[in-house]
Amino acid sequence: MSYNEGKTFVVADIPGLIRGAHEGAGLGIKFLRHIERTKVLIHLLDLSPLTERDPIEDYRIMNEELEAYSPELKNKPQIIAPNKIDITEAKEKIKGIENYFKKLEIKVFPISSATGEGINELIREVGKSLERLKD
Image (tube, rainbow, N blue to C red; front, side):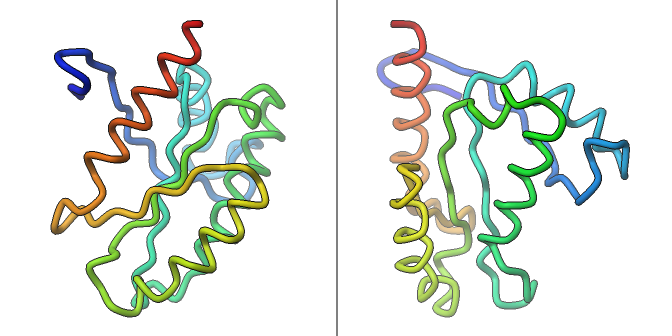
């Protein structure tokens, strides 16, 4: 991924973890091993009303699994990217999500992978986070 005048970083798209992943449920251990090599975690939260999922609960489960596997993983910098904000029902959830993560001091960058809205801001923030880790 390119950002900031030719600087780059590599993105690894890892499927969400299910409960029990740290104990080997699904492909959890394999995915967690990949996550160990990352520097920044981006939680892509699906806001689509069709999933009938609670994106905050999905985030909590992910962090429980990260911590159960290795407490160091939960302490990596995290960025929240609520997706599908091009859908009206999804966009209506943004304020609640931003309020929740503000309390945790985690930045939120709403995006739409369909329209590209918010993607550049997210990429810039990931780049900034990686540069802060170098300091």
